[in-house]
Length: 502
View 1 (cartoon, rainbow, N blue to C red):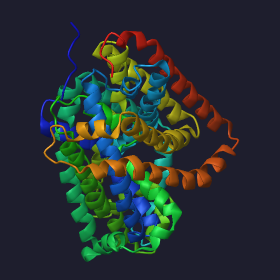
View 2 (view 1 turned 45 degrees about the horizontal axis):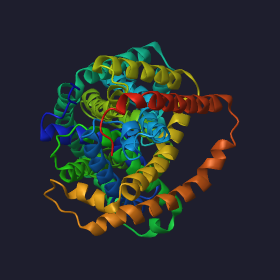
View 3 (view 1 turned 60 degrees about the vertical axis):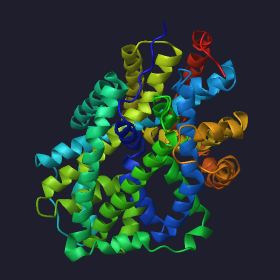
């Protein structure tokens, strides 16, 4: 008798785990830096439009299809896409890209995650540099800039926390969906929200509530951004990244729901919690704090330096100058670590599902092999130049757009709009009008194609023109890894043909 697939234990556990999948470093670091860099309110209008026309449709598609595929015993995109083409080898190989994307992302993401854990404990035990009080952000951040470079060189200290982070992920995944990921989310997500609100109040109230000016900067909506293609590219990219779309992770989580789960409500809750953490908590910490300490003119310049500068240099420079600075810095980095941890677990689970559902391996073996693969890739990103950047560019940007478009074509047009709509409203309290499915099927892919055109014309040729050997080595690794998963998809085909197909 075929063993029954594991399911989420409780509805609240499902929502918190799915929200933890979406909530990550993108909410607390990437979002505020992008908003600051592209004019605050000018960024927010394209952001919210992208959320409605792109984010929510693709989110609901992955939830609906994940639940549907779970009934047939599939949780990875290899098996899910195979369902719609009678498990044809080419379809399963195409689906394997939806496993490669999250794993390639987590290979560099988990290394950054380990930085947050390391900086948290170094802050708590007084091992961070002494703060320098100065209105000049460059002077104030200089000790932390030097410290960051030394720590991530990489150092033995960084390696220690790196392996602790890998071990934590391994142990939680080994415990499974309900006893591992769900319990982690039940503890971590409420703690994350409490710490985020606490730090938001601290940031906004700094220097007699001068931080409120930073919040006004972000939410002073204006229409200038609607005319700038680059702002649309960045806003839509942020929506993809923050909601974990186009990478199959949401569909994998949805495959473990109970057969009559209301996935519309689950999807809307997931998006809602994620947006609360991003546009309320994320907007209330880093940018307001920088406004209060360094003034309005410094914020765009800080944002140009990227998310690492804001997270690991700007924020320590600000928090360590406040009363109980060590504690505040510890809370900040633990906030980042919890956000990163819930995301990294979700990014690894599609490969675990691939080995369990398609190769028919035991859970222990599936987790072990998945973690070994992640460890190899993560060490390449840690020790070889440009690997981290290349993985982020291809897996965290190019492949996301391509795969989201494929999801819409297959899950709406191949499956059929009527079939999808019936699956969408099945067991759902909220009966979404059918015209919204046509927005998913027509408007959303056109939006992706338009954004992709502008983005590729801006970035792709420029990137491919670079001749750095390490970048080409990273690209070779990416292609080899995708080929490896394609082979797994094909050789595991015989093992699933005994089960039901579409």
